[in-house]
Each structure stands twice: as structure tokens, then as C-alpha cells.
Length: 405
Image 1 (cartoon, rainbow, N blue to C red):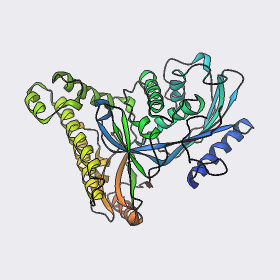
Image 2 (cartoon, rainbow, N blue to C red):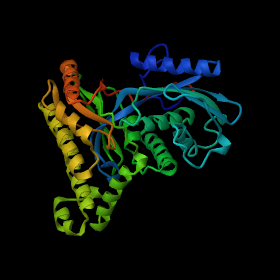
Image 3 (cartoon, helix red, strand yellow):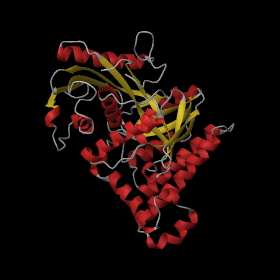
Image 4 (tube, rainbow, N blue to C red):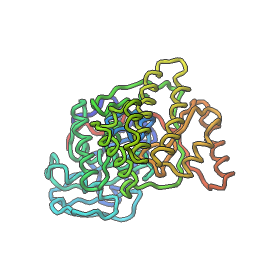
């Protein structure tokens, strides 16, 4: 497939990472078991972490993000008819439908996302209309790590043949996936998830400007990494919390006479505060301050104390998300509190849309083991049960076969 980033495969045509190779093998094994054949192609798409920039993307704001080494693997073969057959290691049963008769309503099944993106792609998809596919993912569903975006991108880039080598091509793919989620899934999401993954590069953070839609890469020292802890609270953005925050942001911008909250200044907020509802004011307050935090983080990354500065800004971001956006919950707040002061920890915050999911911590790599052990112990002492924690690093966001479909 054209548009492949260089250096994403080893000499055998598989992904570099051992864990990724295992995930790819599981997808292939499921395909063989289900369809009694070998898949002809594969694509691997990473999840993403939002380091700073909570709910700033659709406000034409700034975000600091990264693609991570938790991945979704899709293997497939094309068919001579329009029938589509899907299977996943995470969900039982075979899903089958015709590409010529895609449903117009959601079923609540994971295959809704496949239908959503197929509705945005031309019927031929770069080849014959039908395909058989198997999916394996170690991106936690509902954890705020963009598992749904990874699936949409896998279909668009892999089966749909969309190019992603240039900035313009990445933007075109991201817009296609955004349309699928907006139009079919009913989530008024921005471009963050898709662009963060498509621009993702190993050992680099991705700084995104959603006014200019430009991306820049920032090196992350190898002695630093991120850890995630699962609150156990699954969020579903289609349930309305995300849309409510977005409505508050858009309402604030309209009342203040701004194109978007990217244009907001401290002086403008102070002058127009009386005209805003409480929700609108809090949304505006958060976006103004969060853009400032992203700016300071980017400026600080070449500073000798960059790690400590970024960690502090992440902790400040969580407080603002909790107090102003209201998209935290008891479990997320507890995880942030428990991680504070542990060995290696420099800061922590919720990541993604919120309302559950994961807490992201910024850490010194040589203390990750101690940090995770202590965090689990503190969590259990609070009577919260089992805690799933994982270390993650920035990686290439998309890895796929070089040949076409």
C-alpha cells in the first residue's frame, strides 16, 4: 500500500515490536480458524494518549499527544462479491452484511464503526467491494485511548487504500474518519485522535495546532515514559457527555462573539463573563488555560527541567478538567491522587474525553516497576479491587503492508 511510513517493518514484513507481533499472530490465527484461509494483508494502528489539550481540538486549540504501543491489528482478504464478514478476538460471533445494503441505524455492536467508515468510502474501496477480516486489539475499549479511532483508521487506510504519507493526505484521512463518527455514530468529535495517530513517530510527542492543522514532533528522552491506570469506569462518548461539553464551548464562543475559543483572551473572558451561563464560563475558562498549558509544555521541552514542568502541567490540567468541564469521576480523581508523590511520578491526569477510562502518568522509566507496585497497593487499600496498569511509549502510529489490496 502506498503511503507507508518508512522503517515500520522488520525483514520478515512484520511489525518491529514483539508485543505487536503477538497481536498480529492472534489476528491471523483467528482469520485462519474462521475462514479456513490465510489473510492476504494486514495493518496495525496504535492507540493514542492525549498528554495535554483536553477538549481543545474542536475549539481550534493546541494539543500535545502521542501514538502509543497499544495496537489494533486488522488482517483481511478481498472477495469477489459485496459481502463483508468480520470477526474479533474481543467479541464472539461472526458479523456478516452486504456493502451494497449498509444499515442506516446503529446496533450498538462494534461493527457499527466498520459500517460508519464504509459509508464514507467509495463502493469499490480501491478494489472489489467485499472482504473478510479479523481484528485483534490490546487497546482497552472505552479507556480513552482511541480504540474506535484505530479501527476507523485501519479500515480507511488498509481496506479503503487511503494514502497517509504527506500532511495533506493525513488530514484527508482524518476528515474521512471524523465524518464517519459524526454522521453515523453521532459523536461530534474533532480530528485529534486521527491526527495524533497518523502523525505518530517512535520516541516523539506530537504537537498539534487545530487552527492551522499543522503538526510538529518533539523528542521524548528515552529515560522518560508514560503509564496508564484503568479506572474501571467505561465511558461511552455517544451517551452525551462529550456533546454537552462541546455545546458549552460553542455557546461560550458565540456569546462572546468569537469564531472559536482559540481567540479567547483573559481580558475578553473577564469582560464577557456576566453574559455566559455557568457551564459556558467554565468551558471557556478551561480552554483558555489549557491552551496556555500546552504552549508552556512545548516551550519547556528543551529546558533542563522539562520533565518536571510537563508533569506539573498535566496535574493542573486534571484539576481544570474536573472542576471546569466536569468530565472526571471519583475513580479518576482517586487514581490521580494516589499516584501523586510515588517514586518516579511527575504528574498525572485523565486522558481522552473523560467520564471514565484511564489516568495517564508521566514517569522516570527506571522507576516504573516501583511506581506500578505502589499504585496497585494503594488502590487495593482503598477497597477498589484489581487495578490494571501499563507502561506505554510513543511509536509509529500506522504500520501496514507496502503492497496494494
